[in-house]
Length: 225
Image (cartoon, rainbow, N blue to C red; front, side, top):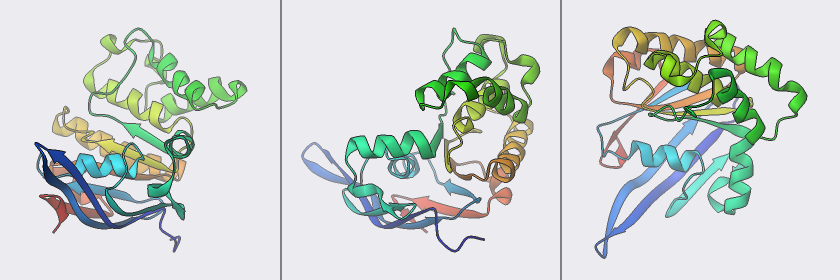
């Protein structure tokens, strides 16, 4: 295993002002994400796990502390610099799938390549490769409303990995799925880690999927247990 962490947080705090009072949502978070690991952030709603995921993904910045991504000071970058890193290196899977409703599965995945600035000569091959990887090559011309929840989730996964990120972030990816579909998504994540050489960090409050993780961070009130 690579000795260098892909991402490391050092005493990360995130504080919001609510009614003139400070609300400490994250309190001194220390964590590492190593290459080709499946890492889970487990905690109840309101524990701070989604806030932490947003910081790791560069969608927000810490109030104090450091976030090093590929040995670069992610926490100290400008918005433009973070956006460039995010587009190239990070993929997101949101709870609500975030698919364009009028586009087919194929067009949704291709759109993510366009937005990432990937050369157009690679779009067709890479889009088909990703949809094949998630088992949807026969459904690629269907639109989201013609797909089941599990199939929509797999389109979202294909979309997130299309530009070959080094880090994949997933917010409660199994929350809307039954136990059988959840197990299929976890199996798919393990396949993706192997085939795409990606690190996956996901939030969950589902105890049934923890056993497949390389590491689980338990969050309570903005801190790790």
